[in-house]
Each structure stands twice: as C-alpha cells, then as structure tokens.
Image (cartoon, helix red, strand yellow):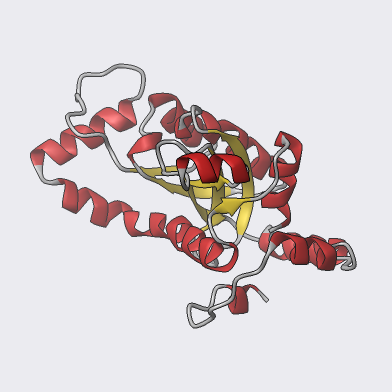
Length: 220
C-alpha cells in the first residue's frame, strides 16, 4: 500500500531488474482504475516539482580511466512529477533532459492530470514555476496558484493581474504573511515523495536507451 511505501522507517533498496520481473507478473490495472475513480470523487490540491536522476551508463572503461562520475560530469535526466498534496499520490509525471526548464514541463503534467479527470483547486510550486502563463492557466480553470515568487519580482509587470496583486501584497506586508495565507507548505509533498523514491530505488538509472530510461522510472 502507499502508506507502507511512504513509511520513513523502511530501509529497503530495490534493484530495477528485480522490480521489473515482479511487475511483469502483477495485474495492477484494475487496482489503479478503482483508485483513480476514488481520487476523482472530489477536488484535489496538487504539488509539482522535479528532481535529477543520474544515468549510470558511463561504462567500466570510463570509471577506470576517469573515476566515478560527479554531478557536473555525469549525464542525468529530470524527473518531473505532480502529486496530491495530502496523500503524496503521483497523478502525472514527465521525464526530460536536464536542459528542459521546470516551467516548460509543467504543461504536460497539468494536461495529463486534467485528461485523467483530476480537478485541481490549488497548485503549490516553487520559484521555478513563477511564470505568468502558468498563473493564467490555473486561474482559468478555477485553481489557486500557490507559487513562490522570484526575488525582485516587479508589481508593474503586465499579463497577470493576480500575480501583480500578490507582488504588491508582499511589498506592503511581507512574503511570510503571503506564504501563510496561501499555505505554501503543501509544496513539500513532492519533496517528500522524491525523498522516499530515492531511498527505495536510489537516484541512479541503469538503462541506456532513452525509451528504456523512461520505462525504468515509470515502472518504479
């Protein structure tokens, strides 16, 4: 169950090969369908974020010649995800190259969640998603954008009155008060999901081909 997977007391590392063999014998379609129907019975609060996964495909020769890969030299991909803030249940995800900005990956995440029937009433995100078009898209469907503002944001920027009003409010009062009103602590839900994900499966991806990389992260 999800509650068991998210238990911080567990100290388990599952290799992808083992997981892949077991997943092939499990028919989880009916369970997932029933669970999605249960989740879609009410509006949800969602959180979006991303993390990096290192590609463990340097090969033995490179490891011998140049040593283990560092964060700068290693190839890695971005794992973008949208989760339900209360339950940490993932509802959409995206695997991209490290060059893709978080705000650009948001649109596929949001489109996928809407396609599956999730009605989002509030979205929490960090400063990487502080884009006027994202504010407008959320407001258009009646969702509250609880997005942290970038430092030095101008109150006179055009294109999103809601964001301008939020900047003015912060200037008149404080960012801490704005965060309290918007309850931006919900954005930590995605970070908790990533922490458990990496504790269970590590942050390394062992596949080499792009399609297999996608499938490996998807199956985990």
